[in-house]
Image (cartoon, rainbow, N blue to C red; front, side, top):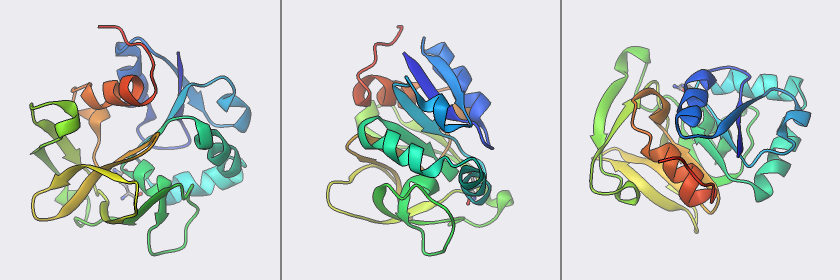
Amino acid sequence: MNVGVLALQGDFLEHKQMLRDLGAQPVEVRLPGQLDGLDALIVPGGESTTIGKLAVTYRLLEPLREFARHKPVWGTCAGMIMLARNIGRDQPLLGLMDITVNRNAFGRQVDSFEIDLDVPALGPQPFRALFIRAPLVTAVGEGVEVLARLDGQGIVAVRQGHWLATAFHPELTGDARFHRYFLGEMSGLLLAE
Ligand code: GLN
């Protein structure tokens, strides 16, 4: 099973390691042709304005949208912003998911934090989530499933069919359950125990 990680900017190396640990073959994607033969794709965290600009430069936006029509895609943090349809400002996006996202909703880099989240789809154990200049989902359309909320603040993980978005960074905290959920539950790929 070949799982692409968009490797234009951001923390794609950490996702690759997580994928390897689960027995998947990670593939760095920088050019449209590199999407061929992939079973799923992860859009990592980083800086969504930079990722968007580079995606335009490398003529990736349309091929990525085309790929995402039938294949599972997961965006973390900046990746969540890339997947959103509406972020209230003009920058290049994939614009797939019917969600409204507020960038940098928690303030600046120094306002980054870690917290235990209740994510019923992953089981009873709380999920330790790391928020780094994270976005927040402020509205969801029909057909969008809310997977996690941050107490009193809003929505931080959503699924719409074969698309997943998390405002935090499961690739950085050593708990592979979100990667397992994406690969196993959503992509139907067989994972090593
Ligand atoms: N604040 C960044 C953005 O707007 C996202 C930060 C992240 O991915 N950790 O793109």
